Image 1 (cartoon, rainbow over the protein chains, first blue to last red):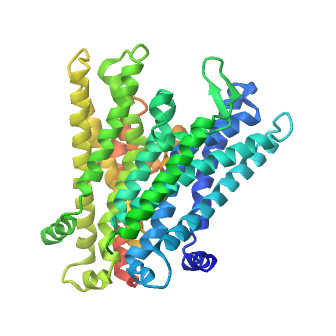
Image 2: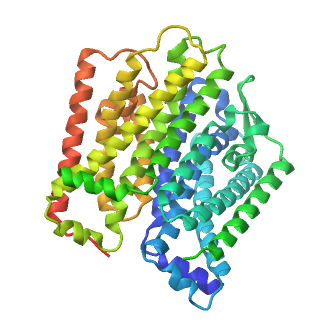
Length: 248
Length: 243
């Protein structure tokens, strides 16, 4: 398994996917930097750690589904383009292992992106001199929540990217995910919990109270965590079974 | 040229790209309408309020990404199976190859805009909004489509150059935010992605002055010519990468 995973990294060594992720995140971070700076300028009470964590979480609802779709598509499409998937499954390795190696490779790249976001939050807080100590627990919850949602999103994207050769559909799904993730806050909780992309906001450690115009720590919801886990397992197993049995 | 266009159409046959193009305006409109329905107390300006809700996410975020998907798709076939060699040795000029692709993408986007407009009219009628249908929204949609052409020229250049399907789409995602920033900084006239916001009057429904209108049409035209000539020049002078 380690060998297969190593080969996945070997295949993408010149694709510069990690640079691409950084470039996308730079745009997201710049946007977050501008919006929070404006928010603090108009209301100095917003100069707290919670503001930047909430801002990044809400922007992740739009950015992460599209970044995930792009990364998954690039890693899966190379097998379609080179017609190498047929060759891979003809080797003495189970299709399930190949599928798992790709999944781990994709998520390790995105986890690196999430760590970059966490680093940005810390740097931003230090530059803006936010009061109090670094909220390690909030940052860990932010990383965990974002990763958990990303695991489910990538499981779904990998299924679509492998099952349908035409990557326009996978990218379209990523775009719709971004759309739902961005507008999730507008809809009732019961409705939005159906869609995995809204979990970026639901699993955020911080929420914004519009009536009180303030940020507050959101209690951990076991139900939402369980929901995300179930979706991850479902999408992964369904994708794995479908792709493994599909005729190439 | 006509044969190049029909060849592009032929390549799109059975691709179901129409499905991708139709889904986006429909979802944008549904969410915009739901938002309008739940906030009718605050949104009192009838047809114009509905326009702000339905066009905001569509015009600012998703139409540029849809253009990027169309451009990547229309170049995908060339990047597969050494097809660039065949295209470059065919008895048509590279300019006609590029322009045919640009025209076909523009037609696809025109279809998306027409569908969006039709759905907007349908939604407004179903909501029984007061007053007649605002005719100027048709002008905004056409202006939006014109701005889409300069984005298409840029994205086509990227998709012709970058062999990956997804990377140009990611670049357009970044460009959307840069465009939004430039629009807010009142520099929207100098960036194709902000010109789309200006053209579709997504964030402000104020009428453009004659000068602004003139600049809008001229700068877009300049962008189309610049991006198209850069891509054609590159296709003519640089060796293609085919695998």
